[in-house]
Length: 318
Image (cartoon, rainbow, N blue to C red; front, side):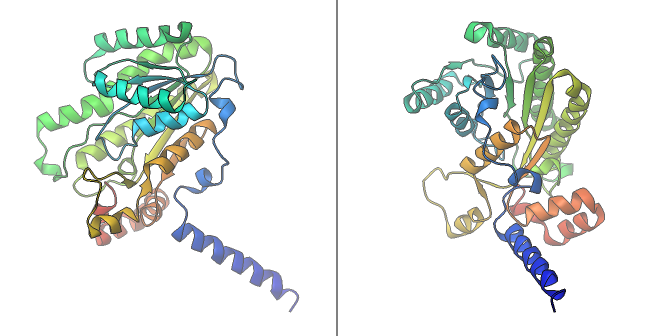
């Protein structure tokens, strides 16, 4: 009897953890076992001068997390912010929102079109690195994305392929290549890449979007291996379904039901910053059943893809 008691306790603990994983957990095991965001990694106390962040703020680009929410949460940690997107008026609105909430936060806006080509992006990088008394860029947050409506893989056009890859892949890689040299000169820098669960688990109707995210994952995983001994870090974040606000402020019953399976934008931003400030190489953010499917596809691909074919998780991996 005495020997059986520890086994019963162990089984009970295992059952409890399994229940939590199935019903409550909203990220991979490595991510959710970390503590809160490490403020010293953002405000410069860990390394002198490491307190500038570069953002690409993109609206209506889902499932990529809202750049505004991410910027607001970085502001609470003492980061200096450079907000970048195509729409200058929108950037100014976001800046004013941040400054109103955090008057001590230093924010600059830098309009940019990620698909404009290397020549234009060189000027953007030069200006960004000159801000805050030539402080340079410590955190590059890749948050731009181009997502088309769901359609079959054979229905995609050449125009659609180019438009998606110009933003999601080519522009992102070009900006990275242009920023990396100054990071290498200073011996520090961190690329935080907002990828997607679609970059790990491709779903029906998302062939082109999934392909672009797979390309990002492959590029930045290789970059991480090449630069890890030179002070450069890379964190790839793969959010699953994210709860986005409805334009009318109301949702149908089916939308409300769907939102119960979705991680909030604020929580996704929090977990993204946890992953970045704890130096995680990759992070998955999602509720079930997407999280389980991601694990299965990663470690038992035949089983994982069989399950996807049976269940068709189109409504989740969006």
